[in-house]
Length: 286
Image (tube, rainbow, N blue to C red; front, side, top):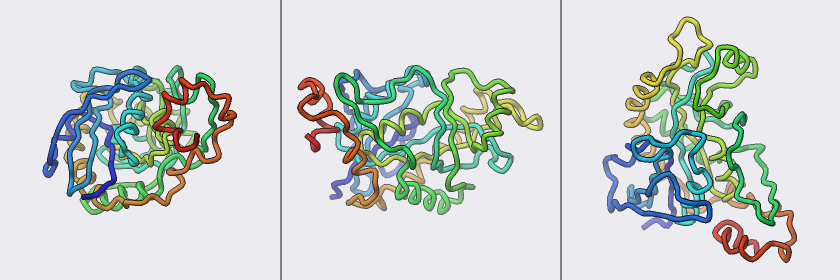
């Protein structure tokens, strides 16, 4: 039986997939409160997987109010070393059509007011986000998406806005001048926190629309997003089913040691309460 544990963050229907065995729900508490919902634990080809609905079952939580810190901490606490994110995005390029997949390798953060670090209360840590996704996991996702016949782009920039409103036309046109590939509301601070937790992170981004910059296409709307999400769930499940058994038992990517040279605070100056709260993340360095 494999010892690796893979977390999957996305819609609440992702865990309803063929081949998922030994299914159970797990409630987890963290120093940052409760995650979006209880997690669904199961096995795919002998590999333990942890499904977490990002917005809660029934899509109850808006992007700005997702407890990202609790979500990532809960997965870390349960032993996840890998996280696959699944999300709907807007396409910012004509070549990325609705229904296409992008496996982003860069992010631009335009969020505000979200708690985007575990490190406060007497501890300072600066992790590198130069390459914000795991190259090994991204490659596996790209290959699996190709194998299932999806139209997929490897690499690209994901612009994360605060929301919950969609962009104005002026904003959408501005963002296009930045050369971004897709726009969404959820992968930041998810990716930042995964890096702080030394968890390998990569995402499957399903294009749902052309935002509102493309005057030849309808503006983004909730029905369009929901339709694409419904269509993409089966594709995402098939990609996940193919990727999970191929994830290596031993990590050789930089994600696994992201904190090795990132801790700034003297260890003796870190409050004991902080050490205790963050033990799953920083314990091995103390």
